[in-house]
Image (cartoon, rainbow, N blue to C red; front, top):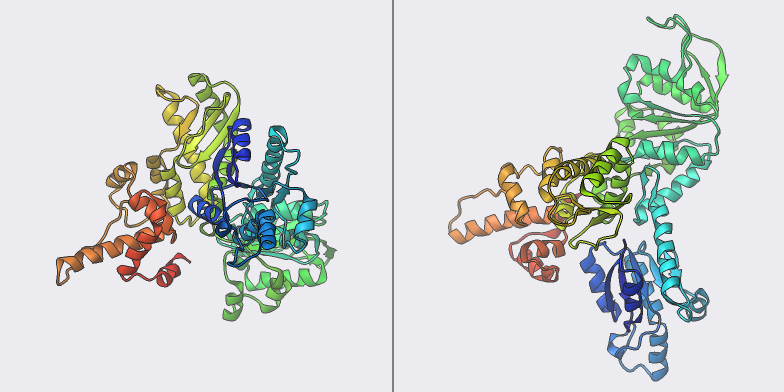
Length: 543
């Protein structure tokens, strides 16, 4: 199911979509760019696709690009190309948001030869549009985007940063130089090495992975370069090292900063000469290996401190290093990531068996699975089970700092599915039996065990109750002041600070939580300023 925003001065496409594809959620139609911008802002990244007309017959002052005193010809051109102007604005603000433009590609070339970018833009000639052609195109766009968003266990999402990383890795995978992956623990460095870099390297050899953090220092050299019998105490036979095993393929060294100075020297020699000598052996063996290394440390700092060789650091090709962002910086992808994590979780035999038991006991036929995160409940689709993450559950996931990044997120979602199914398998169903709701209390329970849990929420029982009632429990410190008003303002300042950090600076989300309406974001920001709170200072805490 897609969340589709319709930008059109008429109702034709909206009626066509709702009639032909009721499984999707529709916003609009909105009649101008101003209304579209407000709708996209309220959606906070939930819109999956925009359906955009080209010709807009709306009041002059609502036209994007309108200037007082414009003549009839200028106004006529603005109306004929309004959709293209809106597209340019959407591209500048939401470069990854897919747009179906209701015109042919040839018309775009005729009208706007300098249109900057048509990536993520799709065309449908509205002279021949009908329900079938529109539905076919929307399904095709969904399939195409799904393929771009995820690739096996890798979730790329739609952010510009992750698209750039993907393109960069595609180029680096083909070269002979090493690839360095920087990033916090759990951001998917090993997945990228195994499932992306190696398959695209064009090498027929094996993928060999070595986690240097798990090996004793005295055994690292033998594990990497091999050894012969008697090379060290306990060496009872010849041993092939990781470099030889990966010859013709890819060698992934995780936590490269764990190498001892001696092992660093040996690694540098192998990279320079393309030859390896087993410990205790004089014979050299040629090796041709695509090397991928990963670390969550600042190797440049380690070089300055003298604990990592400068010549090895430069040999690792730091100029082409790839930095993976933490999950907290990929907020717009979170709701789609829920679906990806769900798909991965349900692919395991144990979870698939649990879901089959649920279907059998509650008489839900078919084998389809849907995932929805948000405030509404989609209509029933026969033969499918709907895993529903309500708005409050999504807020809890958004507010969490995710110190374990993608790894922690995937484990949390899998546990959420496990416990949600477990609670409902034997429970009598009074509502829709196809809906499995992942309740806010369950999400909070799971997140409370994480190192990223909010340390202020100590009274877990009260927190659960408050969350179920729709509130944000926050502990404040009551401090003495000269007046009661100053005491109250200090408490309110603490509360607003915590709320700002939880919503990651989203005043619309704060307004929704406090007043039940995202439209009151300006009111919340005004009160925020009145309390003397500084956005610039608090942003530093979000980094």
